[in-house]
Image (tube, rainbow, N blue to C red):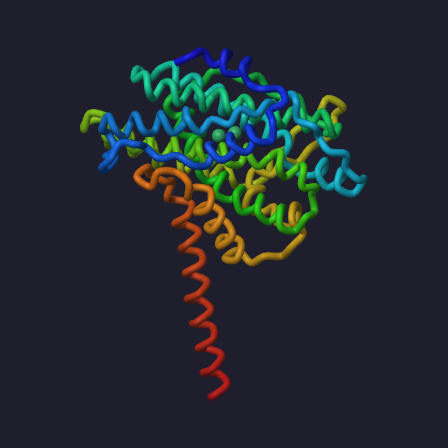
Length: 329
Ligand SMILES: [Fe+2]
Ligand SMILES: [Fe+2]
């Protein structure tokens, strides 16, 4: 593995349109040349997941992003979104937790992929910090980033949390794009970040399958209990808002659940929950469609969305039937 700092020093300042288009295409399309199934736990599967992550790297550079001028209304809409503190801190924590876990991993392929993932989280933090600076968004002071004591737990929390948040963020981002409330240049700036999260959760889903398949059988029950506990923790964490203070003592209300509840804020449209779930599902499928179909995809959030859609259809049929019965009675 070349040192990650070397990758950064090689990022082009002003790539040509052609280079940009090629990097963008390559970040979204990847297939392993190895024929046959990629069985989790096998060397082929492990190498394919690491190669996917390495070869779909998009070499954009946060420091050269030209932030577009915004009209006062759009600027206000952006600065008042209740997400900036949480977004910056989440990326900072993700970088630290992934780097900490990567340092514990013995396998060189997995270590390489997870280290790259940590590096990309830091780049997301840089992108957000530049945006905050460019638009003068008031931020609460960042808490110190402390190395996790339980590295595996912290990595699992970050990984599963990204799987859920990214699924809903894909839908929200598509709605933002469709309604045109934000300038296209801003949408374009965040598009690679969105696709990167897709690669991250693709890596996480495959790492998880690999980890399960390669751990000794007697460790498995304890691990599955921990996975269950992570989901309980995430459900608990997502209930309610987080309050933080900025340097001037102003209170900020941050929404942990914004990716689900934010359609009104970013797209100014009223969508029913099943309609929003359908947008998320379609986007999720689209973003994953270019990657080798033998690699596993995260399943829980899409399955939850399908259940909500199916439930609402059944409810619609039942309610329609009851209405008919009442009319005929
Ligand atoms: Fe990120
Ligand atoms: Fe990520």
